[in-house]
Image (cartoon, rainbow, N blue to C red; front, side, top):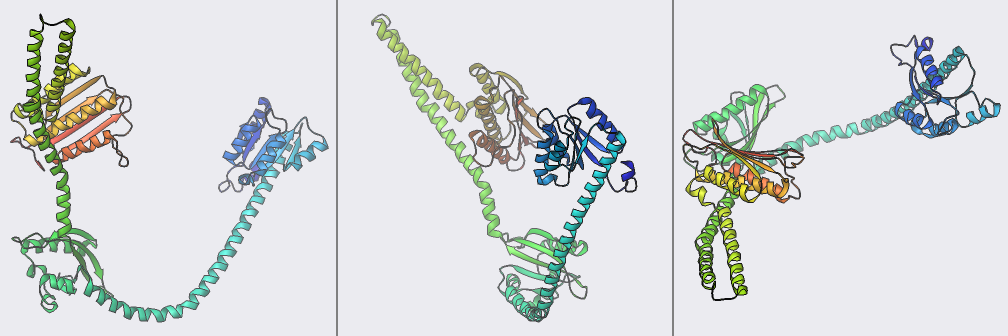
Amino acid sequence: MQSATHTNEAATPPPRLLVVDDEPDNLDLLCRLFQRSGCEVFPAINGTEALRLASELKPDLIVLDVILPDINGRDVCRRLKADPALVDVFIALISSIEVSPDSKVAGLECGADDYITRPIANKELVARVEVLIRIQRALKARRLAEERLAQLNQTLEQRVAERTIELATANYQLRAEIAARQASEARFEAFMEHSPAFAWIKDERFRYVYLNPRACRFLKRPLAELLARTDYQLFPRKVARHMRGHDALVLERGVVVDVTENLAEATSEPRHCWTLRFPLVDADGRRYVAGMAVDVTEKVRAEEALRALPHQIIAAQEAERRRVARELHDGVSQLLASVQFRLLTVESWLHDRADQKVRSEVTRAKNYLGSALREVRSISHNLRPRELDDLGLVAALGSAAEEIREHAGLRVVCHLQRLRKRLPAETELALYRIFQEAVANVFKHSGAKSLELRFEREENGVTLTVADDGRGFAAATEPRDGLTRSSLGMVNMRERAEFIGGTLQVKSVPGEGTTVQAWVPVTTSGSTRGKA
């Protein structure tokens, strides 16, 4: 095989052979024989493996034993020949048992390219394989060449047809181009006349050489008074300085600059314009700065109002919670406590005056009332804990952790660092709500046995961490479509963190728990920065 591939060794890969034989000794002998002759050899011990490897490897030649334990070699040959993906693969059947002429004819009729009988000399076997490979490669090359030639003929015919059409339409296009250029100039003038955007062109010295009518109306001057002027002659100095910087960037670097600018006087209402600047070069090579601007003042105001809406909703929710909590505490809770006290009096009075059944019913009613009173107080506390208003965030967190430890059956580890000065009320409330939402998710979804709560003061802020050892989940981001209750909770936590200028991170690993961490910036004076 080396002699067959020696001249094209650098360009042609070694022949790829698949040898199929259920006798390990024969298989090993054939593989070593063909490997020494320069082939890349892959063994298979049965028909099933031969079919799989042939589909994966697409060898040049398959040396296939006729007698196999699972599928007859002739059946394997038929399947391989029926596969369009293996059309270039040659198959040589080989056998030491079925050596009769009828067996050879049957093997060739099933599609085999050669039928080799044993015993056979190694040199003859290698030579016959070399011949088959040369034939296979020649046929493959011929088929590819024919396909390439057919493709080239088709491409040539297509190009001739296309070129004919191009030549036939060239004169028409040339005439149409002249008319279109004239119409284009008229359309450009009409477009600029009616465009809702401000448009302009400045030369290399940043002087206006063109302004469309809307730009002239915006500047409240006729075109003749605007040409050859600069921004410093038309706008306040601060505005003109920003515009000059953007123009210089476009002119020096040849880049497109996309910004939103306030073009109003310092004492007047903001006039926000979305501005797009880009380089322009004329036919003589002169460079210009072109630009277009759209008044987006109302859009900016609407976006600001939309961004403020969640904050207003949160503020309204907290105000309503505070009102309901106060009414529960000062109204319903006091009324229930009064009724409970009266039941205690009745229970004491009935101790020696009524039978056991009456006393039992009164006691049961007293217990139910006590449970209702505790439930009302719990609801009032969750709506607006008194500790948060009176003692601050750290005390409220500690009280909540103790309540979880007593009533939820969780092991709670607290590391709460006290602050020398309390945080702003809205910051404490937002962090406490984040803690409540995180703990609610732990109860409902995690199946955790322990909970770690940390509140730490850092150099530039404070960090609240709630970590559990529950089941966790695969992704720490909530789904955007079909939000679940837990994902809505994450959205609420993020909005509260952003409301006070902070950030929220959720880290979770399946089987290892979940960590919710909120960070809020704090100045040296103790107040939060940003939106808070």
